[in-house]
Image (spheres, helix red, strand yellow):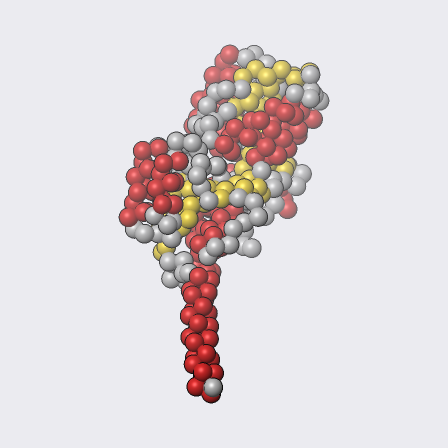
Length: 316
């Protein structure tokens, strides 16, 4: 009898150790490497995303390897980058997709290789989760401010950009607000100003040549807004309100100086990236988020409150 008890105890102890070890192993899957591919590392927004992701990853594992690359909005380039991440056997990919639908085969390939894929800033078909700004809200905030500034009437331009989900949602939010103001006429809403300062400048030069009276312009991001403001100055056009989305360092300067830019609905790329790494690490260890779409709220930065704005890269 005693021998049987000892045998059962030994089996129980062995099973307990085995189960305990496997549970610990599952819970403690190490984050060794991350691959990050973003629209353009020439844009401070994506630089902040990369730095925020790296800071969070190093909190989890000080020895983690983080590689950030610029896709330059080129799908073929981004496919190659993801293939490289798969070959390098990264644990986690943060993906700012050049095309939210066309990227799906690359996402599926990465996930089939056991890599967690988190879409950042814009959606990506097939990703494990998405972390982005509430872009509809951001568009609503910027265009509500614009509509009020021109007293609900006048000629307005929506300066569009690359057709990723973030931009599409911002324009959607803007149009929802402007539609509530029957006195506002939208002169243009479909021109892609490329998400850049140069693109904004070129688009604005075209608008101001075509339209003798423009009361307001909503740019889908801050670089376009800054470029548009420069073009307006060159053509000696005033009496216009420009709003945008981002809350970038350039816009802080613009709001504190003599420009046509009056407001920007801010994003928090640092916190967005940190959240994406946190969600990705938890997914690696079997913890799924309650909702795979995580929307981060936007706040409106204006000339009145810019002094209190903490900016993208402030310590937190």
